[in-house]
Length: 74
Length: 96
Image (tube, rainbow over all chains, first blue to last red):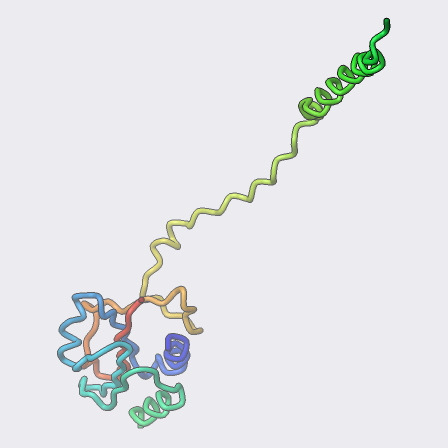
């Protein structure tokens, strides 16, 4: 998934923030609880207020991710 | 009276030394090495040590192109704010 997400980051980084949280880092525990992390890879798309717009569990296609990014920018 | 074994003794007299000589020649050590010293494998060029600037490169450096996989760096949780005032894509991952 890294190449896919990195490709999206290159295209949308000026409008969307990209955050990568290591599940083995204890400092990410608050974010896990707040977002409802289950198992990795787990993706969340948040709006400007930090509310979950959409989430994906497991592998996701680049097209689906990109469509979601475009939708949140509209 | 000549013994019937006399011819055999004569044969053995020269045969045994001959065999012994052949055996010693076969067991002799290998030829001495040539005068020229063996060529040593070319040493690989020394690897340039990373410069201090490279070692201290900020982890949040923005690149125009996607980072290659070997340069993937996780976000610093202390710097993350989910309500950042703009949409955010959050990925929970593991290195294993």
